[in-house]
Image (cartoon, rainbow, N blue to C red; front, side, top):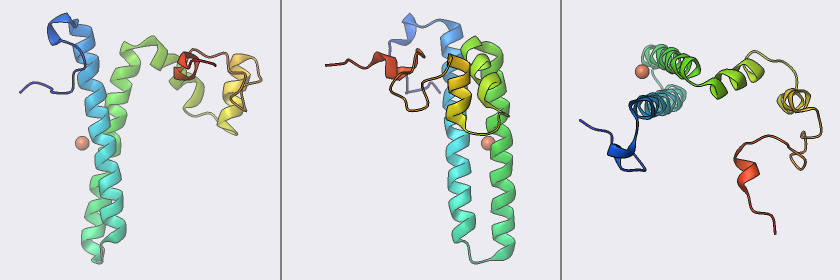
Length: 122
Ligand SMILES: [Fe+2]
């Protein structure tokens, strides 16, 4: 079964890109499952079933982190950002500011190359 979520013709994509796509889709699915289990467990009126649902949710978190680790090992930008933000402490925006030399905590002077930098200013 092939993925139907490609945004470009599959014959134009490298094996590396297709594998990264598989990993990203898997990560999305695992995180979606975490969200669903969380909601089901919270709404569940049976304590035994709630415990099973929480157990299952926690396994999905493990699955998500395993896939994220694969992504980290195969993409240096993920690796760098995970190294910066995961296991940091304090204000996350301050972590970014300290990484980029400050000034981006408000978002207006960010020097990162994130999606925000692609916005057209008028
Ligand atoms: Fe899973």
